[in-house]
Image (cartoon, rainbow, N blue to C red; front, side):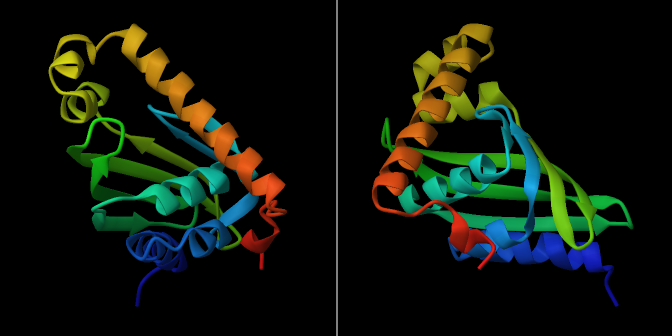
Length: 168
């Protein structure tokens, strides 16, 4: 019998495999703290909206996950996302290690770790190979990711969707 926190992490990634951002959001506490090299730190609905944005924009997407481990405080997993990076049309295979803090059956912290140089080399090609390791590229990716999230949120707000369905 698996630990309940293994079940939460598994449910999160199974929803991601189906591109079901609403189910992913239901795995998060309302004040979740998410971080990764591309977006930096996102809190609360910003984290859920990031998944909504990524799942609605996903092209040629597949996801695998394994090595899900958990205890009473949280857990971890490894996952691989394969997708078409829309800005360049290049295929990316991103290998990620995730760590979680879980309380009362909800994820309160989610930290994704991946090699930014490896990601940028795939997503951007030669340019990524040359400067993918630099703070300049990391800052540019972070700024662009945040800008895309704000635009997505503004479009949702104008459509009357404010994330309330996340707790649905």
